[in-house]
Amino acid sequence: MADDLPPLPVSPRGVRRALIELDRAAGAARRGSLLARSRLAARRVGAGLHLDVHPTVVVGHHVVIETWHETRSSVVIGEGVRLGDHTWISMRGGRLTIGRGTDVRRGVTINCSGVLEVGEEVVMSTGTHVHCANHIAIGDWTIIGEYSTVVDSRHIRTDRDAPIHHTTSLGEVTVGRNVWMGAKVTVAADVHVGDQAIIAGGAVVTRDVPAGHLAAGVPARATRALDGGGSAPDVRADPGS
Image (cartoon, rainbow, N blue to C red; front, side, top):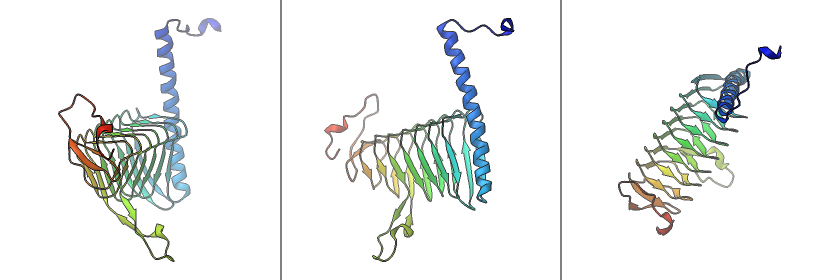
């Protein structure tokens, strides 16, 4: 019996190759489990869920795609996307598209009742929260820093006897191509961030940021135009950062 077993890899390269293959097999099993669990959960609450997940998508541990009661939602996840551990996707009658090669890192939360379009090779860093009630588009190659929030709606102040969470105004958010958002950035509704802009960590973006500009502060403002690339700006030297 022992003679029938394949030889164990003995070189470091062989060990690495074996570990990669084991990780791929485990990821495929988690992907299949995620699809089955998500579809079953949707049926249990009378919801419709269209799931199109590319076979190369890598699924971490404890990833959840939930669907709200009696809604109709669509999720399309492209080739080579990585869904990190504890990713939570809450579909509330919306349409979510995640483009090829995007890295959704640990603890990302997505609430989608609108149309959310995430481009190719985007990095959604640890703890990112995206709340899409109407329309959010995030361009290719963009980096969203750790514990950042992107939201396309706002609550309107009410009389003292009216609950504020029932009064919502919807907007749109567009984050351009090749944008870098630092950690703990908040992008509010009705904001357009132009291509190749950089948003300093901790900024609260409530107005448009021109393409190729650095924005910093609370509320954020564009502090200067950036050069053609090749170096990172020192955002600490900018007023309001």
